[in-house]
Image (tube, rainbow, N blue to C red; front, top):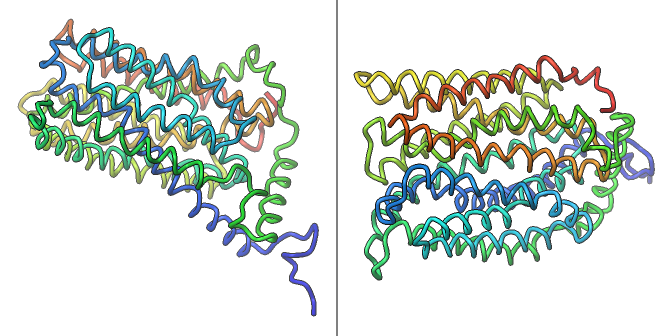
Length: 445
């Protein structure tokens, strides 16, 4: 009896066998990683909903909130690169366990905040613990997926942040509305505790559920492991020579260009993340439950945009315009939001539609961006490069919310800050079109 071609050493597996193998991998990895990202996102951004009650209870100013929301990203900045280097040494499941349990505990401790200093310290620690998760997953998925399948995988994973918005808004509204006064605690305190507990549990589960590398996957057959290995080896050869020495990253102008591009995009994303509840409140919806439902509805479209744009980018093998077109939509929506908020006679649905366009465009650009570093970097340079790009770029998450808080304190409005952020996001689109080579023309950077 002849041996199927998929089992012959060195043979190219049939496309349907390859697709079936990667479907199996995706169903195993992406739902769990997405669930962890939902928990991370909830624990990171629930401060935007807690703000609706917390500021009055603790007598914090808008600037104190903006600094506390943003200081989270300083923890990111200092700890992302070391975390990704550690992941390469000890594996993904130990790294994810450490990170997830840590951020869950810190989230819960925020319920006992009484002073701005305590608020700043815990937000910094939350960022420090979560620092390695996002770039760690980006690196982890490169161990499994060849480049032509990554944008879709990235988009599916990253859409969990939008799903967190869909779930998190109504959940935060319900907790803050129904739990206020229980055991003498305010609704915002219950929000931190009840959303921190699942992360601690998930961190323990991660150690037993995750698999560090394809060759260690007991849930893949020998043939399926060979398919993955061959796909990754062919992709590595097709990519050509790429930088693999991480020590060259810090003096490489193209790496700093990627940092600049992602920094501009994250200025917009962070602004939306931490100020959407405030923007919705300014349109006339004031109760936490209603604010939560509106935010959740908008995030549904953000999730769809991330998945569809990533899938379309993979299918057509094109990155530059898929990124820039999405970023341009986000910048346009941000500017329209500023304009419509300044026109009080408009129906509330008009600024909410502008906010939706800003969110969908901005979020849809994120998974496509992560194809750019992996086109050029391999080995140790990829591990450190992804973390370096993400950690420095996430300083935008520190600056943008704080700047928005200062501008709102000074003017009483969020519109002027939105115009500034729209211009910065537009710059991200321009930089990619002007300075990033087409995929077919890429060279080692």
